[in-house]
Length: 332
Image (tube, rainbow, N blue to C red):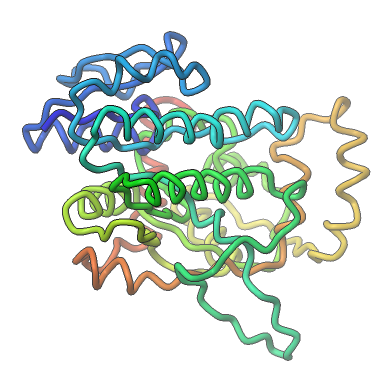
């Protein structure tokens, strides 16, 4: 098949290109002229230059394509909410319209668990931690999490296109780790822990998935995903303390001793935003509003309907990412 991959130079997109080439497909890597091509080096793909924010580039890119994997999105600089909306939301809208016009047989849209919003808080002591599934919907203040909100809005654009006849499936990966995360070399949590830049730990939880399991989920969604459905591509649910301890052990460094209160962090966000021009923060201040939540996910739907096996452990995902960062010199 002729398959176009947007976001082809990124973490997930480049791995998908590699898997599709291995399967024998004719792969077209859609990217901007300024994109870093490191992860596509030596790969038998055909390069297609374009930009999601320039709809006129999409018509030629999609001509004759059987399938589109739409992995492109703006990871997010909260100082540019307009740019994030233009790339992630309006770009998705333009791509879906172009895919319909070109007669593309199937689109696999890479969303994120961020599009599901935040888990409901439990006020019991100890709290009852529930798993979010594909039925969960956006429930958070957009200005506190622009990335999640734009991913949610992008999903709505896909659903609008589906209602007009497009065959599309949505996948929602959790926190993706593994080798090849070329665009997060400076702010990866693994690098922050390995270089002992993490000042402390905050209560909460996360779901970690290996990039190879995410790729397998995309390929399965192409073959077996149901039109209009969304599938969570997740791995292991674990507390932040467990993740930091696990990563520190792999990196051979000590674990931060300070435990921060989520409530305190929420209150200092305005101060950090004021001080941002004078500080070299390793994180975006608004992300502190997400502290204290346990982002745990139920992956049974993807396993049942897509036929996915048990995912790799978080330890494997962390170790593979750590070793890759060492190989490229991001960690000494």
